[in-house]
Length: 399
Image (cartoon, rainbow, N blue to C red; front, side, top):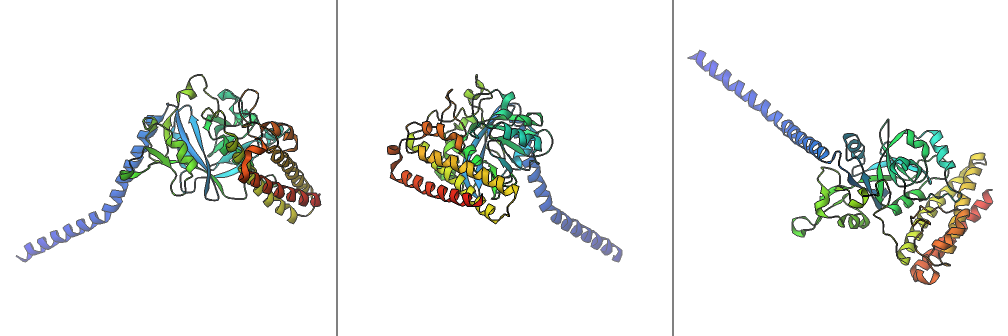
């Protein structure tokens, strides 16, 4: 009897041990199942969009505030390598901007340093006024104009062209053109440092917009996307224009089918979803907003230059900032003198406009008339002129 009791007791102890071990493994097993399911969904989504042209949405984040959106065509679809690069740009932080070269490029998402030859080539290819024409180009010429998303052949990260960077063509592959977001690229251009290294001194990121149902169960809104709390209305408005049937399911990216205009005869052309012509007040407000962003950055650089000892580096920085501010001065003056609409090139394509002394001649042709600015915009213009003149006076003392 005692032997039977011993066997029974041992069996009970073994069962208890097994039960405890199973309980301990349950959470990790459940987590593994969820993780495997998510991975499976990602693989399925990638397979669904691989080889099929899709549009991905990004937004510019400056000091945790959204400052505009981009919609980029992935001509060859979302392959695994591109998906991995975009995964590094998901919320909340997004893909930190590694470097911005004015009228050159913006690298982000862990992109390594761009070699000196490419930097020098970008500087050589800028126009006399520092601007780059955004004319229609084939995809093979993407590194020579603004408005294209590139990926390095080796290493992580992504790169947006803000102007001519022909040397990048041998070290990067073209993912596709920016279909919408010319104003956002202009803001990025204004944030480019002119003093010291090309790495921005304030936190800037390009963040992937993630899928989310707007309105929820009670709202019944169409399925659009946002990057979470604090998302800009500009991003939401742009995406709300999409047809729900064009959305491509994905676990962490807002994807949509490529619009017919991007595939029928205009493949490789940037900014085809931009408005053909903006109203005078809209164009003026945009110009003043970007000018203010530019002056904010130059103000910080002038303070930095004041703290530097006299050197060739300081003198070069003073010259660069002064040239830019003189261009902004001319553009602000022209904003209230001439008539016209958005900045247009002869072929009807708009460009990323730089402030520089050489651009003063074309500025008047692109500026809204003084009477069209209105009291609020006229007051903003006057204040920006005062700030700009003050910085020029300070720089004159530093020469």
